[in-house]
Length: 529
Image 1 (cartoon, helix red, strand yellow):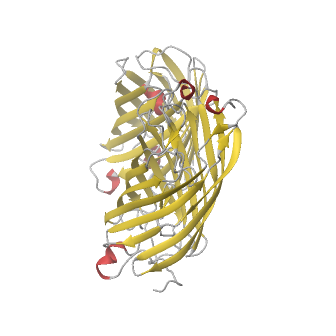
Image 2 (cartoon, rainbow, N blue to C red):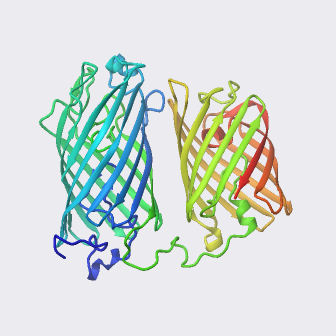
Image 3 (cartoon, rainbow, N blue to C red):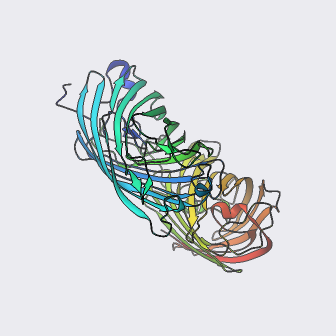
């Protein structure tokens, strides 16, 4: 292959390299790790979406939490366009009093990437971005009246094939950031040299590590005096392809910025500056393929039809989630009300096999917390966004069904409190009449770190009636969370309804881990189609 041509096989080798043939973009060597570019591009026509969140272990509010998102589209085999953004809305915790106040740090924009060379195991590209950076807080004396500035970046990523499984990356770059924000010193122009490696022992599993070394700059993070200092920015993680079109990353980083221009900014060293996160990747279009058909699942070549009972089992319980995901193309709308001014709206959609996207809007009851954990979002509307990936499926020979769910959210009223929530719901069906659920959960917010394990039983004495009972033990030494209810499915329609009693604060996410001192009674109406 010459430098002037490029195909979807450009990232793979013949012979022993056949391990990496016939790949989707999820399975290929990554074109980027968040905002660290590699020398590779997506195959023509591919669309690659990424959404994630990370946070440090300590600190007020969420403990410094970053939300990130990115979309890449390969217009041709040599030209790719991108859009990206990140949101931070917490105290930066640099060690001075002014850093204990909330800082809103939002960045986003677009970029382009062009392949310069792809030959003999060497891939090189040029990448540039144009972005906006919004900062608001006492740190820059503009609280309530933030400042918006232009920023940008240039990168020259180079990737080298060492073996079929190992690739090295060298990425020189420069970030063009404002010199000052509202008269306060900012980072300005920051050149850096990036390096990284990717190890992919089998198709669908990648481990990676990157580091960016800034130089010739006044700094790329806040010092303990509130000034500027210089430190390397690193990231390490593992990407697991759950399906040929969807993957999940588990990673750690000291990076504060998650866009190309802001990626050189590190968390202040006075904070607990290691952030741990989860990122979901999904490719709705795989682009130009090296094989004719991409199967939707690693389980089997042909998936069998979903029965009416299996559709109902995708809904989940009252406070415990289903280990199944919605059937591709199916959507779910739930609206719940309860006493003590409880309100809840849940929207879910499955774009592909074994993948479900969730949006939840809730108004939690005020007061009445029964445990030691601090109450969250009292009498305020909040949101949580995230998704669920199915990892095991009893229907196709696994001992039980298992999924992984991640949600991140905040309330709407400033100063906001953010949540990072994760769960592993598992279920075992004994028959069409009975099944059990076991769900482990984790939530991080404010200074709280909560763990919980819940169990549930579902019994269907009649075709359209389901009886539900659940208990959850939480690490905050509070009351055991319980719920009991009945679900009626209106036969032949997409409608169903729950009536229930529970002492849980909410029906989704962190609300299922916080007990109330008195029971709540509620009604949920549902449309699933």
